[in-house]
Image (tube, rainbow, N blue to C red; front, side):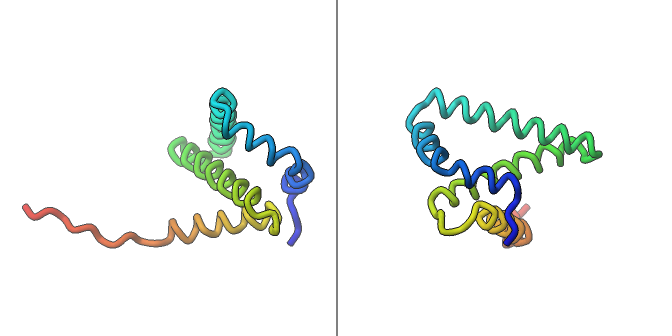
Length: 112
């Protein structure tokens, strides 16, 4: 599988990513900063989507969903380095597509 440029950069920085994530996980101030950075990134992504004509409501949803999916894939990559980050990203987005395509069972409507 061909790796993305971002994937190659992140994989090259893997020796720094693992201890960095471990330190963030146990340091409340760093977790807060990490969340703020994620919010800033999702806001920028949503704005870029809006500028491309994506409606506001969908731009925000897509940005937040994309970030959450990327974050999930990155954590899986840290836990399982036997696959590339790109492979984990493809799996995460495949999982998201499969999940969103499933129709939940009809919920019983309360009787009137």
